Image 1 (cartoon, rainbow, N blue to C red):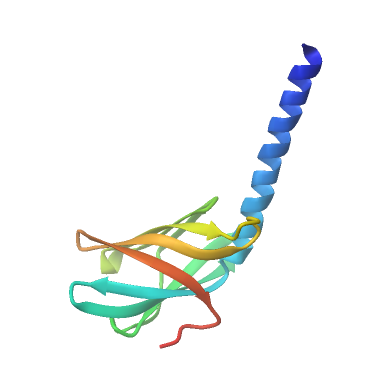
Image 2: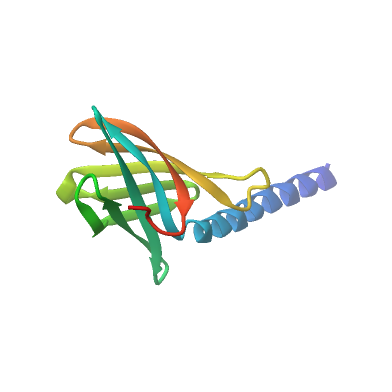
Length: 134
């Protein structure tokens, strides 16, 4: 019975530790620019968030030529595992998303999220780009 409990404890510990390592690796994969379409009513425009690190904290800047915004810094950027929250109160904006990884789980391939602004929610899919294309 002791050996079963020891094995179970070891398996739980390894699973927990490997999930921490995977989350840390995915953290680094978020750095850079992520772009996708934003469709609000009849308006179809692109937006991009560019992530960087300041010390251990993420920062993000919003770019959208359709909104006339070029590099507006976010007030709040939270990355908790695969969950991402970006807030820019002066635009009444909150973006919440989930980083999606490839099959092996070692690289983020897209961010599936929701754009909340002025009591309206719009789904957004962001893909990695070298730099915003607009």
